Amino acid sequence: MPSSSADELSPRDSWLQERSQHALARFDDKTPVIYRQRIELHRNVHEWIAGWGGSSLFLAGSIGVGKTHTAWQTCRRWLEAWYAPNRPWSGGPDLRTFRSTALFDALRPDGPDEVRRTLVTELQKCDLLFIDDLAAAKASTWTQERLFEIFDERYINRRPVIITCDVLPNGLPEITGPRVSSRLAEMCGDSVVLLEGDDRRKGVAA
Image 1 (cartoon, rainbow, N blue to C red):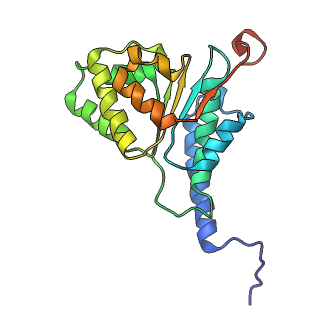
Image 2 (image 1 turned 90 degrees about the horizontal axis):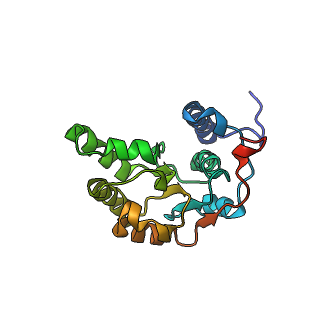
Image 3 (image 1 turned 45 degrees about the vertical axis):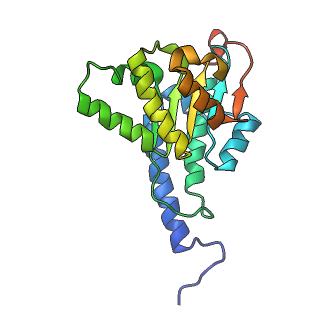
């Protein structure tokens, strides 16, 4: 008979490990090269990943302090945690990432209505939504209304978002509209992390 060892993975854990490897490989492929290097995360970010509730994460700070790099690495570690053996399995995660400029462009009223409606629905329902540099794009009244559709649905269903921004949540009403700003403030709660430091792009680090 074949020998067995306490160190061997159970069939379930082996299957989860395989699924995790495939999911992480796909995520790495779509991660911009500059953000693939693992970095040490702020302790509050570690706490957010470990918490696994319905809360969202807001990464604020001046230009060049590493908000986007932190967010990409946070998404990856969130994905790793999804496949943890002790977590109840609920299917493979749907994780969406967008730069605000690309998202606002996709939500413009002059695009195909069916495509826009499909995108809004997908962003309402995905397991984790990451929007990078939220204050970088100028939102029209139309775009603010579409953002409200997305964030209100995520708010009432406790679906988390990760936001990077060079202003704090209380500076968002002019960009997102007051209704989205109010919901984001509650969604993020204590998970507003201020990253500090010099602009790394002006030094040797990217």
